[in-house]
Amino acid sequence: MDNTVKKIPYRDEIPDNDKWDVTPLFASTEEWEKLYAEIENSIHEYNNFEGKLHQSFSIFLQAIEFDLSISRSLDRLFTYAHLKSDEDTTNQDAQAILQKAHSLYQRVSEASSFLVPEIQSIPDPIMSNYLSNHKLMPYVFFIEKILRYKEHTLSKEIEEMLAMAHEIAIAPAEFFKKLDNADMRFGTIEDEQGNTIELSHGNFITFLMSYNRDIRKNAFHTYYDVYASHKFSISQSLASSVKKDVFFSRVRRFKSCLHQALFPDNIPETVYHTLIDSVGKNLNPLFHYLHYRKEALGLDELHFYDTYVPLIPDVPFTMEYQEAVETCIEALTVLGDDYTSVLHDGLLSGWVDRYENRGKISGAYSSGCYDSPPYILLNYDNTINSLYTLIHESGHSMHSYFSRKYQPYVYHEYTIFVAEVASTLNEMLLSHYLLNKYQDNPLMQAYILNREIDEIRGTLFRQTMFAEFEFIIHTMAENNQPLTYQALTEAYAALLQKYFASTIVIDSELNMEYLRIPHFYSAFYVYKYATGIAAALSLAQMILSSDDGAKKYMQFLGLGGSMFPLEELKIAGVDMESPDVIVNALHYFDNLVNTFIQVHKSLT
Image (tube, rainbow, N blue to C red; front, side, top):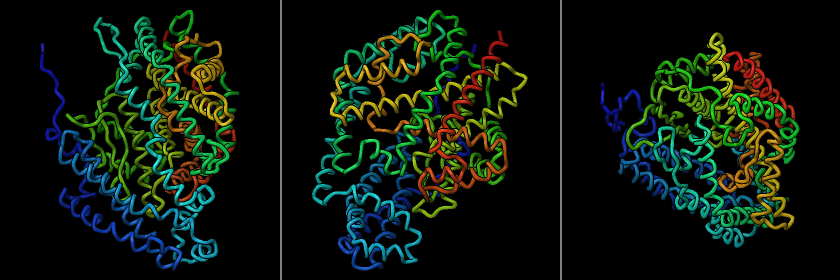
């Protein structure tokens, strides 16, 4: 028997080919320090522009270009520092330069804080003259986005007061974060082997995926008992966060909290309401799936803690990194050689930090800046989940690659509204490819179908329910209705009845689920997950059905932040102001459920 313990390697034990190459950013930390000093010595130059932007076009243009230049250099500094820190959090030199980068960013932010209010205060005739100058053409959209906030910007004195109130404003979220992550303890439960395990946020879903129903039931009730013991304090923190949103929306003269949240991306409120209305009218496919889940698990009644356990056990699957890269490339061939050749080279030569090492942060992400490759952090482990993670993060990175290739620095960053479109679309193309590859393997087909079903269920349906809850409680606050624990819980309970109907037995603890959702402290954010997956589904179908779909999508990837997100998606062929996009996604989900049930029944 081999009793060798497989240990996590140290960073210097990882082969260089398996690490990302950060030398395109800086060849050494000494080079980093040199740019740091240059920026630090340039901060005082902001004084050359303060109070003078209205005096001449030349000064105005110089100020814009100077600020963008500083920002570009700061991005480069910060990217290098956070990559070095994340690859090994025990590296004290990396931690030091990351702290220096944060400090420098704060000092630059303070020195440049006059720019936006001063631009907004320039008299209209002068600003019109500036905007008509051909030299400002590359920055017109950038300036216009700043000017959009003019009617919502207050006097200098009030703006300073609101800025000073920042720490007070984030207090509800900070209270919840500390209570939820630092102070709360969830007790212990026994796993399948009889081991006593401490329950946590990290392993809660893992226990809900247990095939032993007593274990997942115990985990559910044990977990929520802790929230029940803090229900009044957490509900008060959420109520305070909502009232904070109401305060700022009124002070800044927005029509509502929703209006304020959608304003930066120029999203009409109809998009938000169309999402909620369309999903609410098309819940039958979800009910169908949940009814079948109860049948497949052989249960007399389905509880929420029965909705995570896989209907298909883990399938035999292992894939080395190089083969995973080739699989991703084959799945994405439909996007064309311009896409796949760049991605293939990047994934094999310097973009990706592939494997776990001691001190490396967990999870995965895509990162980088205008002057670097679109880096990917992985902890690849040869599983099918790692394969999906690789193609997901590749979607982000290729979106960033083309945005930086075709846009100037000022417009290279795409908005959060479209951020998950490219990554989710890549996952869908992978599922399409694998379903074809394993068409003679019903077990693998069922696994892939069920994986996609649960992904859409957790994103399109669940996040829409969360979005509706946010709208309800903000409307209550705007109408001066009390946000007590009872009022919040009744509002959430009504939504659970709507989104699950008679498909599950709703335990009383589930009515408190809203207490544990951190996204509710970032108002009207979660709807973007739902719209993003709906847009990705529409685009994937167009790409798979016509060459024109791929061409439009590639054009979309190169738009960066050069226009508002709805206009970008229209260029790709998706109109998020129409209910058709949401309805088509729901029909797609319906077809997935029907196909899965047919395949799953063939296994028995």
